[in-house]
Image (cartoon, rainbow, N blue to C red; front, side, top):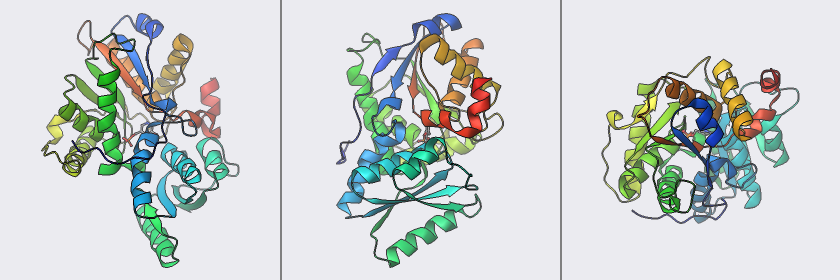
Amino acid sequence: MKILWRTKIAHLPTPIEALPHLSQAMGGPKIFVKRDDQTGLAFGGNKTRKLEYLLADAQAKSAQLLITAGAIQSNHCRQTAAAAARYNLECILVLMGDEPDSPSGNLLLDHFFGAEIVWTSRDQRDAMLNAVFEKAQREGRAPYLIPYGGSNPIGAAAYAYAVKELIEQTKQSPLEGRLPEWIIFPSSSGGTQAGMVVGGKVYGYPGSILGISVDEPAEVLQNKVAELANATSRYLGEELSLTAADILVNGDYLGGGYAVMGKPEQEALSLFARKEGLLLDPVYTGRAAAGLLDLIRKKYFEPGASILFWHTGGTPALFADRYRDQILE
Ligand SMILES: *Cc1c(COP(=O)(O)O)cnc(C)c1O
């Protein structure tokens, strides 16, 4: 597989830790965590891996301005704004929603990194993103467009390589030489899962790669991931032809919708914090962990299986005003 040129932003390899007290409390499989919340850039997260390759591409194209889009509490936008600052680039973020009176969580950090923020509605987001990009082009600002979640073949490639990183560190980690049967994580724009699936095939990961959908029905996300995985493999000189049936997605944990924290997320956050001193986030890892806990209780996993919960970050959203009351409940 072709290895793309990257900028060195992330702290890699990210550590793997055992979660013995959580495993014991659940009375089920052994649970481990891969700490991509510790990728090192501005509180880290999975987008930092993708940005290593996206920034390299932006530099190769002599870009001077990064433009991307997301939700108000977008972790992707926060990490993009930080990467722009680090590489002396300008940054415009197109955020969906109404500008809050006082910014908190990720949005506070977006401002802190000096990003220019453009507000739009969900219906208008694609049109607005294009308009902002074209305006910047006309003004000679050399813009580089990063898609939602950094999920194109360049961004997704980072997670193909991350599977190689996991396989290589298996011996030197609490996994003690045994690859986990399951990799579980939150899946949304699909780049993380598409990359993992490509890496899993190419580097020979024998287990199951299960994305817990954060905002879309399973079939929609499966199709999206399969398509992006195929495109990523072609970009990297491989010829995978995957279909939705090859992509494992669970869409049972959508709760009240995207970014709505419910009881299951609250329970998961609290359990990880109190059993392991580990912070999850209300939107992504909280939802995926809630799914994981429910699947363990339903005896979904074979006895003796080990599970790697791939922590994708997002913890600054813990400090967003909208979640404060619930987190303290
Ligand atoms: C973006 C994000 C995800 C989802 O990753 P995709 O590649 O968009 O599927 C998961 N967790 C966190 C914390 C994120 O910020």
